[in-house]
Amino acid sequence: VLTGLCPLAGPSPTSSIHVYTQREVYGTVGSHVTLSCSFWSSEWISEDISITWHFQAEGSRDSTSIFHYAKGQPYIDDVGSFKERMEWVGNPHRKDGSIVIHNLDYTDNGTFTCDVKNPP
Image 1 (spheres, rainbow, N blue to C red):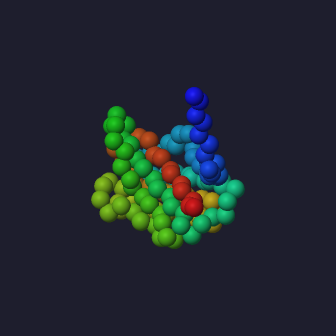
Image 2 (image 1 turned 120 degrees about the vertical axis):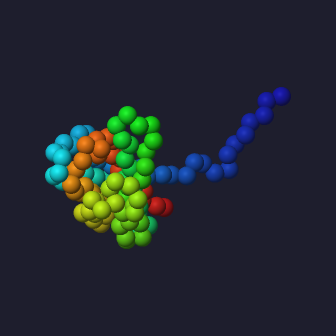
Image 3 (image 1 turned 45 degrees about the vertical axis):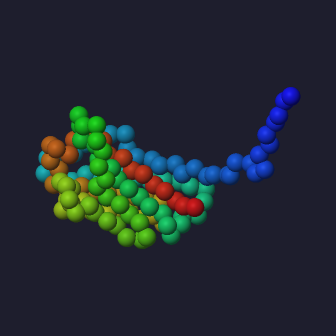
């Protein structure tokens, strides 16, 4: 006897969001650098949009959140080496989630990741 299962509802449609960053960014110690993050979505930009930047130091396995934008407000983490050196220069309505890091240090070498969510 063969039994078949038919789903009552198909998979829900989803829309992707495309995030673009520079592959590599170079800066000199003591200067500043802009970490660009632009994005594209076929959906309108929700008031619930969130943008999070993560940093993974070179040689480390761990990534830490260094910046978060949500509910229309930027939140710079109040701990860690970036807390007083970061500036939000993005504008989500222009599909921009960029930040600036001031007073670069050797310890800033690593991977920065921009994560954008545009619910629902």
